[in-house]
Amino acid sequence: MFFAMSVVGTWLARRYALQRRLLDQPGERRSHTVATPRGGGIAIAASVLVAAVALAARFPGQRLLLGAFAVGLALVATIGWLDDHRPLSPWWRLLAHVAAAGIFAAALVVSGAGIGTGVFALAAIVILTNVWNFMDGIDGLATSQAAIVASSLAFVADGIWAAVGWALVAACAGFLPFNFPRARIFLGDVGSGALGFVVAALLSVAWFTVQATTQAPVSAASLLLLLPLAPFLIDAGLTLLRRVARGERWWMPHTQHAYQVWARRKGHCIVTVAYGITSAAAIPLAIWAWGGSMVHVSIALAAWYTAGALLWRWLQHGSTDGTEQVQRAKE
Image 1 (spheres, one colour):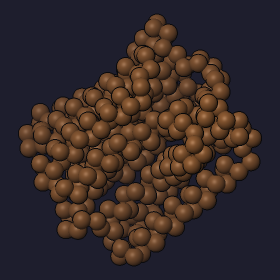
Image 2 (cartoon, one colour):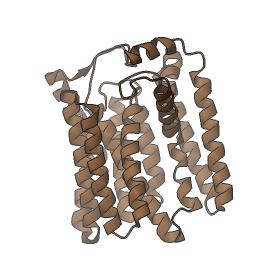
Image 3 (cartoon, one colour):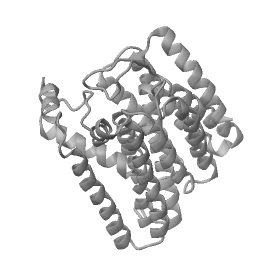
Image 4 (cartoon, one colour):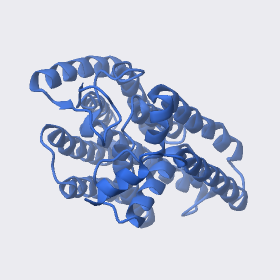
């Protein structure tokens, strides 16, 4: 059902974008070479919203949290949809993301989670909503990563939230043929923001589920939930830190992420598949380490992220346009 909704919704979104001339033009801060419609991610957001509303109607005990989830998702998608039509200040977008995160985090605490989990949810939503926006720069990358991470979290969350996760996976599968291996429409901010919000909400619920099982504020099992997120967190985090250290306007569009540098050398398809394989490989690693001690899991997590950081540095090495982009970013 959600696959079909996404397919039809993406097709309609593409027609709408072409009629309204909502096109991402090629440029020095873009990774594509032809004008491409944007805003197709509204189909994914709408599909997951339908899933949340349907589940809330069926399971009254979850209405508060599912309702907060739906409101937060609608808020993030709406601000992204408006930005796709007429660029907004990044600070207005951030304010909307914080509001959406606060609504869901508060509902999570009221539903029985501790304050610590609420703070985790608040931070996760704000961070991942923006990480998915940063990392949505080549064909298929943001959508495939969301599907892989959501599928891993669906195995940990309870039945209702597992259904939300699988609804996201189905919606992503419906959108991907329009976006990969050759993009006929982009997610737009409406889509990238929505993906980040849903993934973060699923992560927060899974974190809460593990806490309730282990009776520990932070357990080894909860840390393993971060493994499939490594490619996006490492690339977005290290690139952002480097831009801040260089005194650049870090909130502006750019093409300095490792995936963008690599895509200029090897093409979008190879990079998207490689990132997908890396995220997917983290799932059996997490399963293997599940039940291990905090020391062993921490070592495994540190090794995985360290290896990713070294790979990020290697992919960035030899980039020929870095100096020029730094100068433009400071202007």
